[in-house]
Length: 249
Image 1 (tube, rainbow, N blue to C red):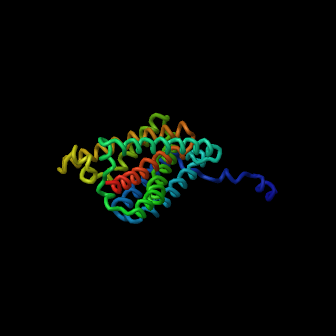
Image 2 (tube, one colour; image 1 turned 90 degrees about the vertical axis):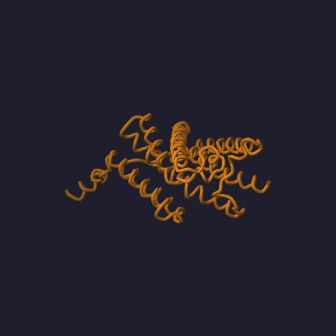
Image 3 (cartoon, rainbow, N blue to C red; image 1 turned 135 degrees about the vertical axis):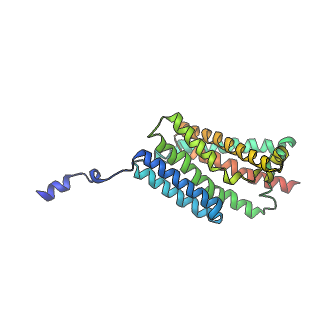
């Protein structure tokens, strides 16, 4: 009896999934650890922290019963996501080209953190550090896993709002010295402590708004490739444009 009946029983009945609210809490906890690792404990490990944290976050999603499609990485949406990605990269490239050609917007590409970079260092940022160290982790985390688990405990509007606010807060530590690193912001906020705080608050608000836009791209395209492409092109082409402008002057 026994062996036949046991063979007929589905194995899934013994599998326990992580409850949605606990999944949200675990995702947020992992993000806090990843943020502190990247910005305080081991900034040089970014190329390792990004993929490891992304894998752990996807593990939480799968443990809670989610799928690749829930994370925006389903095979069925790959072609549509690729079309969105190529279009977004083209739009950002065109905007940056116009910005670089106009004298009153050219200064926006200047950043003291990138002054003196060689062509090889720029290529490293464009092709390795931005896509692996930044885009992979942040898009899998905020527009992939976090958004997916939040949708199980609240409506889309609230899920988007919470994911976007947390994305803004994620940028507090990286933006602490922003007002003195970008000349265009130094002219506005100055070099005082208050100016630095205001610039940091502004960065949080701006990135939270950007997070909402990226969530919407994820929704409309059905794929994580769309927000990944916009995120990568905004950062990576910014490095490339700033470098080319520095060479031209």
